[in-house]
Amino acid sequence: MDHAADAHRTDLMTITRHVLNEQTKHPESRGDFTILLSHIVLGCKFVCTSVNKAGLAKLLGLAGEKNVQGEDQKKLDVLSNEVFVKALISSGQTCILVSEEDEEAIFVDPALRGKYCVVFDPLDGSSNIDCGVSIGTIFGIYMVKDKNEVTINDVLQSGKNMLAAGYCMYGSSCTLVLSTGSGVNGFTLDPSLGEFILTHPNIKIPKKGKIYSVNEGNAKNWDGPTAKFVEKCKFPEDGCSPKSLRYIGSMVADIHRTLLYGGIFLYPADKKSPDGKLRVLYEVFPMSFLMEQAGGQAFTGKQRALDLVPTNIHQRSPIFLGSYDDVEELKALYAAEERNA
Ligand code: FDP
Image (cartoon, rainbow, N blue to C red; front, side, top):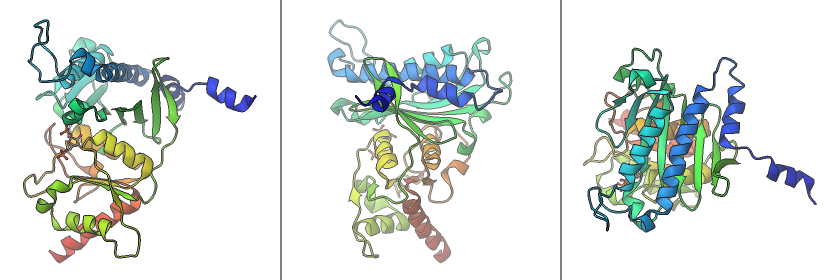
């Protein structure tokens, strides 16, 4: 019997145990973050279960449709939003919530307030729900200075002020990837235990990758540097092999692959959408935070993504993120264009 392997198998590092371990590095901390995270984890488990049984439970389809009992059906993204909003408020640790699903930010009742702001997309990649492709929840966490005097500016901060960020991918397995600012760790849900177990410790993105990921259907509207970069991926000038194209069209799944295998994910500006498509607060920032923590880079075409300061909660930005060297190559093309302008 391999006792070492057996000891490893039976010594389960759950996400709560991992965060409590991290907490011991901050003697001043009182466990508030651990409580907040356990409520996020609960939301993820609920959404995971709902996604898995969506077809059976007839959760698919448009919000407002009636099911066979004549009851109003909730679309999965509407349901996921409700679950996360309720889980976050009931944690007692939040003061402002910004969700992709809600036009306005939610200011938590003062009696239930804590010191954290959570920005999130409860179910990203929703156009993929009905065909069973991987989708996910994305979240970022800020801390306010004074929970008694919160304003919208507490969330309109640059991404580099985030305390933590992560995503949960509902795919062939349910994987939660988290950074609290000291590296990136991945946890997989063991359905029999109902616990997320550390399966991908200290994720580091390869320095250079062999994959590019972009919606090429938009190519006719791209700017010069993006078009040139993609051309170089296909027809490299340095004798390297061309890169492979992989595009799921579900940000969490595309970023998850990019983190693990390396390469670059692009959602550029184009003539029709000069600000790109993806939202700064709950898509661009959390993914950029994770990418940098894993050793990669995130760039908007003009600046480091985490340096952006959004002026409205649903603002969009072009984004390029992935392996350090691949993003560096793209940055050089933007710099060259600026020199020649
Ligand atoms: P979706 O429209 O399905 O919700 O921001 C949402 C998002 O998906 C991302 O998850 C995904 O990366 C992107 O949009 C896909 O956009 P395109 O269909 O324009 O490629």
